[in-house]
Amino acid sequence: MIRPEPVQHVKHRRDLALKTLVGAVPYAGFLGIVFERHGDELTAILPYDDKLIGNPDLPAIHGGVIASFLEVAAIIELSWAMLWDALESGRLRPEDMAANLPRLPKTIDFSVDYLRTGLPRDAYARARVNRSGRRYASVHVEAWQDNRARLFAQATGHFVMPQSADD
Amino acid sequence: MTEISPQEFINALPFARALGMRLDALGDGRAQISMPWDARFIGDPATGVIHGGAVSALMDTCGGAAALSYPGATTTATIDLRIDYMRAATPGQRITARAECYHVTRRVAFVRATAHDDDSANPVATATGAFTFDHKAHP
Image (cartoon, rainbow over all chains, first blue to last red; front, side, top):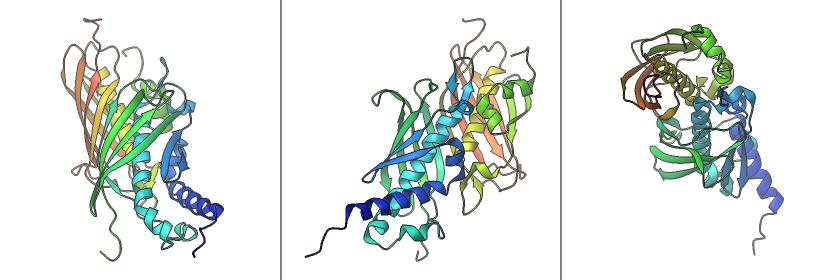
């Protein structure tokens, strides 16, 4: 009988892989974006900062910050989904990721709906991979602030998947 | 709008200032805004290419500036913005966006924009967007 893997090993592996993936993207760090993980589900968090303001009179978060937040959330979700099986099967060791970073998907197009003014407070986003083939993927992202059901922005993006060495 | 200088317009937007944006030209529904390459804005560490989101922020700012510079405009906000990424921007090179507000209705400004690096013949990205539009004539 195979004993189940100790829970702290599972958490360490997944958390280290996620931290390495996100830590490799300087622009995510510049915006202050962090990720929370529950199993394989990711939530992107954009903590409020004064530099994120676009319209100081309202004040409101800059539309470009919102687009950036959604695109970061989409790319990390897609990369995470792409790496998950290799991580869980042991084919990819998170300890090896920093020295040999995975190639990231490339954005083809990204379309953002601004539904409500971005308020000067934290924002959250979750992305859903609607279709992921060998070459192309389509990802939808939803973002909210105070209430999960009241989205303040959503986006759809298309991506070219990175090609592995054996392709 | 008319009381402040172009660069004061950018400096009044904290995030545009954070990205080091510079307003190069503005007027009559057209704007040109550029931003420097900066290691903090990298999206893909393997290539050093700027994150698409930073290019979006430049396009959004430029589109909004174009709408605001349309005669009679008072305020604007982005309704939607779609960006097509044609190629990776060359690391180390400045990115320049040009936006044109090509049609306005009583409530909406339609904007298109392109962005390029030193190779101005091959755009890095193009964008189309709709912005809210408030006129002095239709308060």
